[in-house]
Length: 363
Image (cartoon, rainbow, N blue to C red):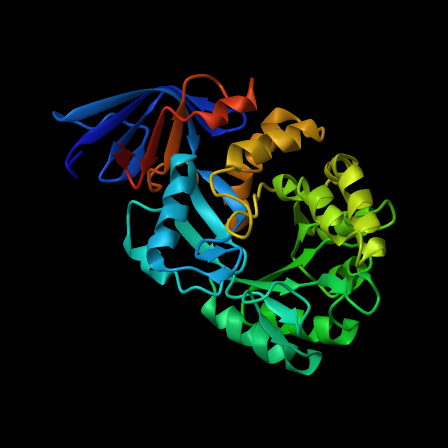
């Protein structure tokens, strides 16, 4: 498909949850709802169109052992693209993936820099591992390197305690988040447990990843402060296996992980019911495969989130939250076409008919 080819998406275009339009045109890689005059070289794609899906917690350039080479990172990004994920918030990576920005055939990436963790309190080879006195300086560094986000590791197993515990003193977190905000960056944090959440939220954090430790007393605080969560339920599904591996050495931690897993759906539904913004993220790129966005949307529905709201968490709503356009007039033509209306059955997301990225139909 040449740059001069006009694409006609013929069918129903879900420009918003209640904004359904009769087709669109792609001219010069941009969305138009007006038929271009004198168009001769026209390609037609038929079906139900959604804005390119969002994976708001994904790690391109990372695997279970740490940073990967560019060839492996490219394969990860292509796998996400084939699943319909055309916008990624890379929630922490030690790899430099800026080269992706020069490729119009790969998903767009919003980076959070490299994870910032407490010394020996995270997965080896993933994060900057530092002590609290250095937290503000490292947050400032990653705020400048990222695309408007910084990623903290809020809690992890404390081997002396034998269970999850907060990584940072409240005063250090408050100063670090204030510095990120001063530099124009939002802050998110990896949090499994209950005990790290209040300090982070009261210190002004913008988002919490996983958020399995949300409890009835914390949910109103999140809602009042407008703190979003990205539950990564496809990752939380691995907790029983992780717990089995820790039974001998860390039985307290293992039991805790099982409890967090058992109430995962109630946690997410309670957050949604309270008005906490919930977004789709898979946590791909560590031990999880890429391309799981449809499974995560289905998990949100299983948790009790209405299908249209689960779709919004990976499309219209997620794009607005990240400050990126959907399918409005003049926006880059990043969209996915399906056989049927995904609002009726989100499982449709698992089988894209066509993926269109920067106005080009991906073959």
